[in-house]
Length: 205
Image (cartoon, rainbow, N blue to C red; front, side):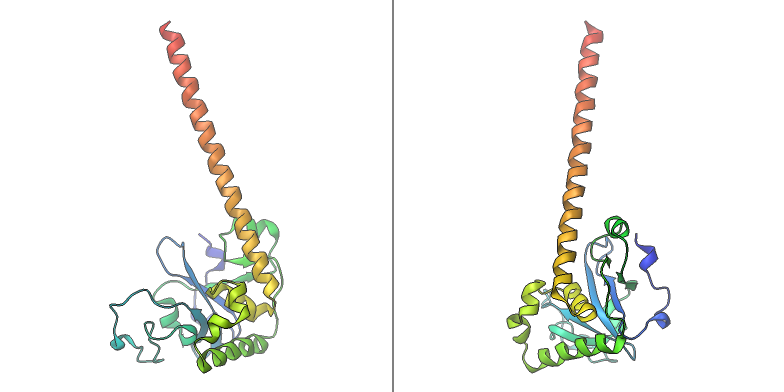
């Protein structure tokens, strides 16, 4: 749906880019991360729900194992997107653009322009996570964005927790508007059916 955000070639990636990929065909779930160069991405990964995978699934290239590692992790691009497309998160877009495109794809605020600073932020969190996996559970940052990958990436690119809260608020607003639109459509449909039944009864009489 959001083809304007899709990256046609991995070679167009720049260090410090906030990228994301969808984790299912319906595009209802996504994974966000920071591209750090050398074909690698740092991102927040929750604990795997699958228990059927084994140590043999460890990537031969980056040694990442999706069933063993959680919290802030680093892997190659292939492990990150797993065959799905790559998209670039958009910053500094208009409110209209933000309302039109799906939640979790853009933000009206600005981001840090220096990719080195963004990478430094990501690497610091990665280092802290490696010191103690419990750090991600006790870190206030993760409480603020409810332990999700988009919040992690936004924090790295903006350095501001408030941005995460603003994006969450925008998502709730969009959801409310969608629910209102569905309710209106349902009401119109019911009214039309009632009118049809009334007219049919009148014709018989």
